[in-house]
Image (cartoon, rainbow, N blue to C red; front, side):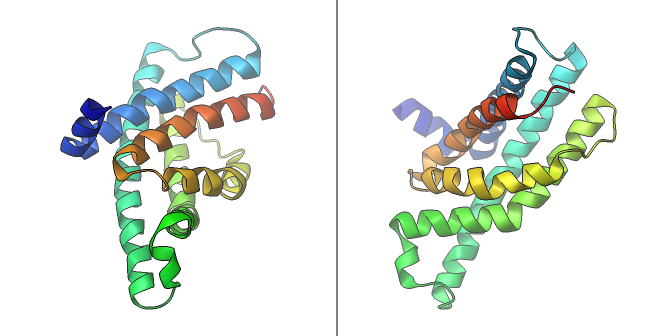
Length: 176
């Protein structure tokens, strides 16, 4: 694990991009396989490359979002707009998760949908409202766990959640 911590500490944006590219794309592949109840590769070569790039960009955007929202939460605490008890532990993790998901999450999901529409050559926003609903029932609790971890593990863990969500979406989303 020391090598991993050294790598993400020395390369915060590159490591975010790579982790999201691999794990986010894998989450989409797993989702498609579960949805269609068969093992297959759901993307052509150009779509696959596009998905990798889109998830990599999302990893960088997420890294900036996480850092920015943490500064926002610190400022709220410093200005007594959040209780001092939220400066550490589960209070910190929950408050960062809450603000990440209500202030940053909807725009990030919309941006990701636009990326996906470009890659798949379509203009489809079906399911975006239900995707936004996952911010409440999935992402706030998931990122509370994420922000409970040491900083060096947070982006990698956030990327891992993409696989979990891919499984959930594969099970719950009907085949088109």
